[in-house]
Image (tube, rainbow, N blue to C red; front, side, top):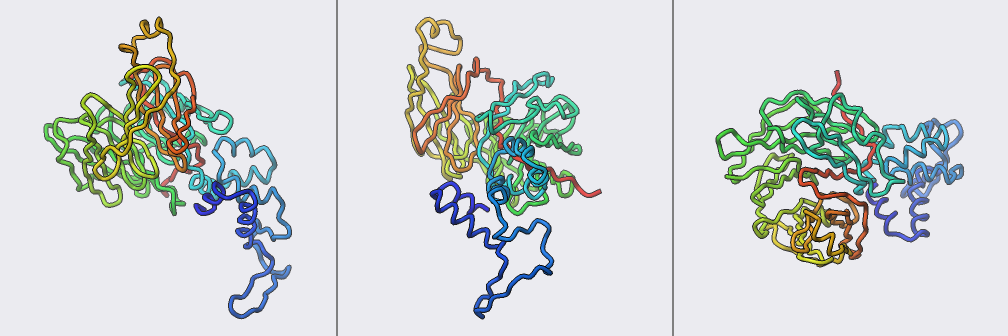
Length: 414
């Protein structure tokens, strides 16, 4: 499926058509016997699956159903359910949900929310493409209580209620209440949702909570498995984070969980092997950034604006999290002198800005949030795209990257 996805993105239209027909050979009415040179015909008496379509019977709609729909965002698929009963049945099929969740992995937008202890602020959704990406209930009102969003992974969200965690798909509105954990995770817990797609048709997922041992300079890990529907404490410990705290939320990619810290370090945790490590980011004091995925690798990105319209991105990465590159970009963030004097988020002509966490497949994007707008900066094409007017920058507002997916939520057998 991944090979087909790459072909769709890189080949010309003619090559794509050839690839589609090559992949459709499975629908041929004959099977070539390798080595013997004989030809075995399938007759009308043969028992074929109900959805089996022979090559000569294939129509364009059949090609679209089998080879195009899995690469579309979830909102678009929901619209296409009205095409016909056949399309409605196929889009509601668990197999397509699995194929779509493994094939469509682009950044669709952000859930954002002002984080407060009383959970009085409802989340909202910022779509990067309103016609294609979206959810029916951005406030997640289908959940049984007010929540704050902690993490996302491959189309699923991890949310925290007053006493419980919830995992939900905001597109399908399916959700699951997680059983109580054994250890205290704190009021703003550092918990990630780890949901790997490849070969995971059962939709198993993990939660990993990193929490400090009271009065001790050590971080412990508690892991929930949806397969066993239970929590357990990992034997792994981290002793390298003295006099620092973890920044809530976190990022999960390629089997690893990551958390930023107040000391500009990154706590890394291998979910499968349960090994913890600390990556030191050599950034200047007082400057903070965000974890993001660039070229399928973890990066830590900061942004600052000295004055005018020019902003500087510093991108750190690699095993030693060293400075890989600095990029100066012009965002066209023009303001009048009067506005500069009146805006409380502008100091001496410089604009307060920050980088939003980002996970994306295919496009190397850095997302920048200023006092007025959100920008997408494409590193490969050096292109800037303006998304919206975001209002004043509130440091309590949390942005969670999201992929518009039909991913199912695993329910343990009763």
